[in-house]
Image (cartoon, rainbow, N blue to C red; front, top):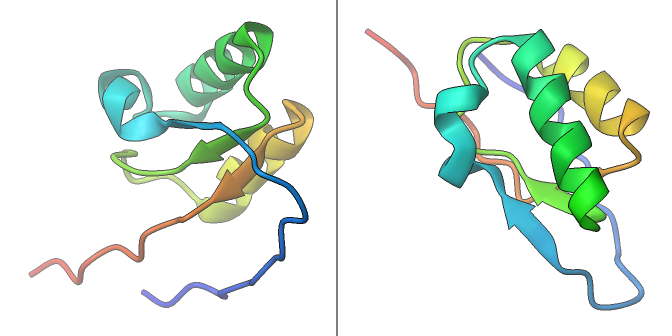
Length: 81
């Protein structure tokens, strides 16, 4: 599966949360939304998306936008056999 790659230039240093560390809670969109809200409440403004379940990338982008988080350093999934 191919995803559209978008490059963004960040004009300042940004501290983000690596979502692989909460991968057990990022398998479905409602859980992802809850985790992103908690991360936003902590004070992060960016997240590195990794370790998610099989979810639609557009839905993930929407919950990031809804949480005012910038998703960065996204990894392309490997082809599954």
